[in-house]
Amino acid sequence: MKNKKRKFNIIKARHSYSTKELAETLNLHAGTVYLWIKQGLKIIETSSKPYLILGEEIKQFLKEKKQKRKHQLSVGEFFCPKCHKARKSLPNKISVEYTNRKLGKVYKQVIIKGVCEVCGQKFFRFSSDRQIKEWQEKNLLFKEHKETIYGNGDNCVNNNIVEAQNE
Image (tube, rainbow, N blue to C red; front, side, top):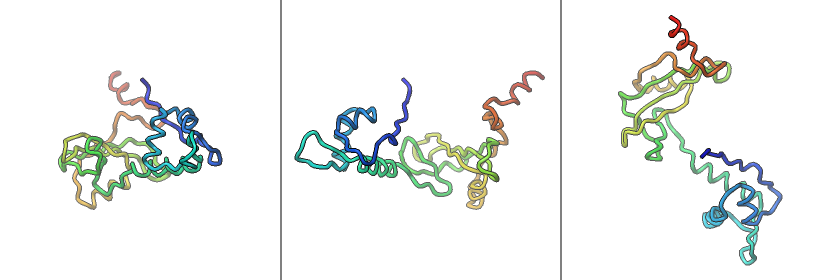
């Protein structure tokens, strides 16, 4: 089954939605909408059925819900998908891979990998070579890998593998 990413930008701010309309518009179960109402989604009038919800309120509720899920990470921290918290990595398990993809005009993308010090879960963090300098200033030790299998930015095939097979 394919994981569908829901697009909430189809909600019109100046339109009112019934719970059924909202569920159909966002391709959700009606129970999800009622759960959102219990969690604080404001309805226009509680005494009338079906409940009507302003599009502006839906957008605001979903924006706040999305903001609550975000975790601010400081230098040296990763988001652990198992613990659902910001965690530090075991010091001897931090490594950096340079992808050679550009981030803007100056910086390049890197992938910082580590292992959770609490649960042992492997995790990674997309970053830039600028942040690597910040991590080094904080005396975080890690292994560096010069290139990865991510390609050169133009395509996703690693040309080094093809050259090595031809030799």
